[in-house]
Amino acid sequence: MPMLIEGSCRCAAVRFEVASHTPVPYQLCYCSICRKQQGGGGFAINLGAISSTLKVFGKRDLGLYRASIEDDEHPAREISSGERRFCRKCGSALWLHDPRWPELVHPFASAVDTELPAASERVHLMLKYKASWVEPDIRQGDRTFSLYPEESIAEWHRQRGLWIE
Image (cartoon, rainbow, N blue to C red; front, side):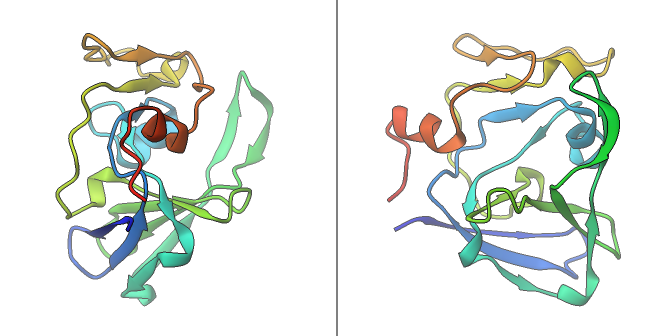
């Protein structure tokens, strides 16, 4: 049975729960969107979960943000298809959903209240876009990527025997 993950915003106006096969917070994203949305340390950690299991409490206080992207990979400004949800009262970032992958939702680890399994190794991605002041804490066994790794969150968990059926 997938792990039930519960989360909330800082003021508790919005709470959520969602089931996840892939609850290990191993993937650190240094892109400007993640960093500025919920990454006080210069990165954000997004989990993977099953979108059909997402239950939201306090929907009236839920906001939606879709980032404008213009960088080396997107030379013409475009609006991201990713729908970033946040609390309109306190501003806490909660999760990301992208209609291109309707079966998935990505809770931000920073909003999760449930005790999560520790990652024995981590993936640092989008390092090309990290802030100049950020010095990634790269440990033995960690992998680094200028942009994205080829393996998905699901593949990473399966390859390490961490997938929760």
